[in-house]
Image 1 (tube, rainbow, N blue to C red):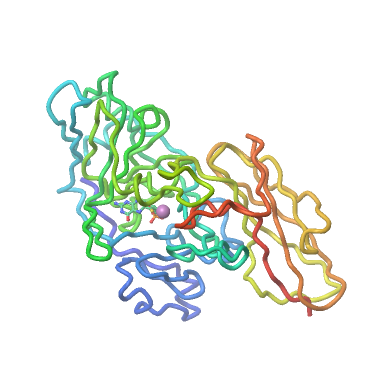
Image 2: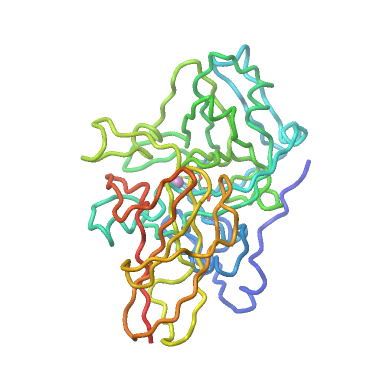
Length: 384
Ligand SMILES: Nc1nc2c(c(=O)[nH]1)N[C@H]1C(S)=C(S)[C@@H](COP(=O)(O)O)O[C@H]1N2
Ligand SMILES: [Mo]
């Protein structure tokens, strides 16, 4: 039985620079080190500082990948782990899979973005003046990784899924989520059987390593192109049902409420189009020097087809140079050159369009919990 490689070590360069303060993660419930400068710690969550991706390749290194935890990271053992598939959508009794049995199934590898539906939430307030609740992410609640694992479809078929099954609900082994005195139970969210049988993975590897504890060790769900909450970490059981299922994560959280949405709220599945500059807000850039500026764009609705950038606050736009092919569930890196003239404050904008024809709007449709901020984000810089 493959054992966990032990505590994850931060990369050496960060340690040499003396930037690590292990205590930074204290109280967050997150296991890996969260060096200031690489992460913004937000309660039980940690956001990747988007500017730091400039120094990474296409895939987000595991030690920089954002963490979104409802409670705390459990440290499970693969040897004691098993997955129980159960419910009236199966032909027979519950079926159990061990870690070794899962590893023995045909493996698939898929490069896919994983993103929290609330990514970009802080801009509802700072750019639009909207009142929203939830973690005030900037744009770092997203990453791209190579996920390797078994197809959920294979596991469901081995468990005897019936053609009448309509919903499939994975549940995590982390502690029940309690908020304001209400116990919502363990994190779980149904998805249609059609999605579960399509492209969903039961992943045990992330970027060629066993899943880190914080990202779901030993096994997590990866539901490509869907809201991050569909990608259940530390999965322990999966209910298969011949009737529609619900959970607080479809009826209360991760649902769009507000005057611009239907009275009962709108469900959330596929992620929107978004873009981020790999630049800290407020960066100082020298005048009359040509700067190579970079960023990334991604979409749940297919690849990114084009990215337009503006360095004058949105008056003039030009196409950025795409450095990757905008395929399926990944992102594209892009670059542009800018030679600022006048000194003073300036705003950089990036607007992506995906292969489905969706373009980032100037304003996002508000919702009470601040999900799906997809508008063009204004990145302030100072020319000096
Ligand atoms: N069991 C469990 N699964 C979970 C969560 C959680 O708190 N518990 N958070 C979800 C949310 S909201 C997101 S955005 C992703 C984050 O995955 P990551 O922490 O690996 O980046 O995991 C999802 N899966
Ligand atoms: Mo999320």
